Image 1 (tube, rainbow, N blue to C red):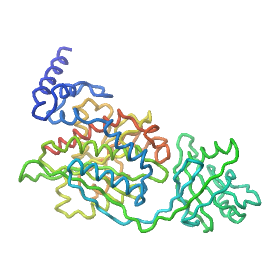
Image 2: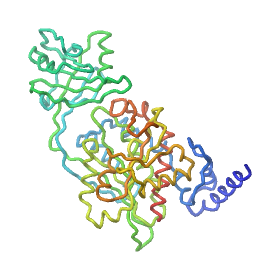
Image 3: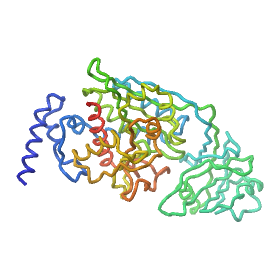
Image 4: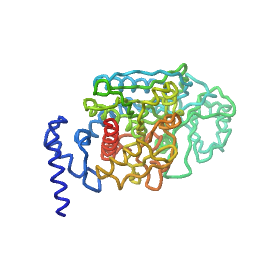
Length: 453
């Protein structure tokens, strides 16, 4: 017990002595020595940890997330939502005096839908084989799984949704005069709901066919249980699309010294129908908050933030970026910290996973593990373990140290929250400020440690 008290006294003395050097109020620096929220052990901080741990604030990051998730909402690659998010992110980084570059790249057409019920508007997918750029308004008929349809559906909008839908029910509905069809998927696992989608139809039809998320089906059926419901169903073909990476850089602070680049990254797009609060608005705002905190700190390496477009359609933005790096540029990157889903409030997601493509340790995973030990978070951290499926993959394929960092279920990184890729991935339903704070501290301390080497 005496040893622990001595450790706390020494830590406090270091904090006070270094406060002036790193520009911190002594009280703020000393507060960084206290046990961190959610940590199981008191911290044992290095000098470089103080300006990060004492300054990062999940509530500041939340202000950005309210814009991205609540105000902008779904940010589908190349569409208005993603472009609005691009402009917001670029402005924040420019206001912080970073050198900001927008990197454009072409992407495939998108087929999206909108279902409007009174004042409510839900984004869905739409079928490329259905009629596009049209709106149909009519009363909804719930046809269950589509195995039994009324003989006359003239002027109706037909809802077909079950665990297994009758394959040609949409075609039968069209032949019987339906104005539009709403196809929904219901998951066999009641704890895991399915996302909106763009249905692939075996035969084309001359009416719009929208693909609803499971929660949208449930909400529509709740309304139908109370009486007749009229909806507007709109299908839109988005053509000639361009998505963008937002790259922000601040050079090393020591003149003439070129010790490489450290990257902190996330993707800012989302899937149809989802406001993407945790996936990956959380990683995006982590980058913006760390950009604020790290912008004036002395480093031996260049600090670079990258916010990727079009991750949800196959890591398109990060692959474009890595593909266009010259060999000398690629060799300069000392590590890429990719942050994807770093704030879920789902109770079983008690583990902060360090994920590398091959499961091997590298500069990024080692830096986060070391930061976890210094901050007292190490019992919550596992890895590295092998997993791809995020924007660290193209860096690994190019031979660059990279890791993906994420809160997921304790039994394994494949265990994701039930709201994953759904309209319920909102701040209210799926964001923990405490877990976001832990993520900020871990990545901030790890990245700054690597920047100073």
